[in-house]
Length: 157
Image (cartoon, rainbow, N blue to C red; front, side, top):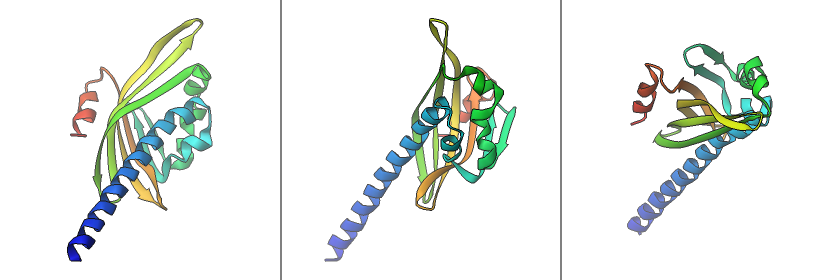
């Protein structure tokens, strides 16, 4: 009987990990949908109340209220509705109720009849599970070609 209980406990643990994996990947995919959709509320809800966002070491946002600035910034407003964020793939690692997703983001921009890559970046998303859902606690994003961009990728291995 003890073997059956241990086996069941291990199976339930593995199922939870699969569910967490799917939830995190959906959350990160929803970032592109929310920002391209121009929803500051949906974008902000991806992040924890005490989040920290660092984009290229130049744009910093602290807290969910400031995370709305991703959508409301003049730069982002200038590219709507002609932008398309493609998120991933991501490499995920876990430690209990925290996780790290490391991967890519590509932003396409339509100008006239031409669609081009506007920004390619490497990202590290530190997540925490609070109130029964995964939330981004810290986001670090570095544009391709920067001196520090490869370190973001290597930190996920």
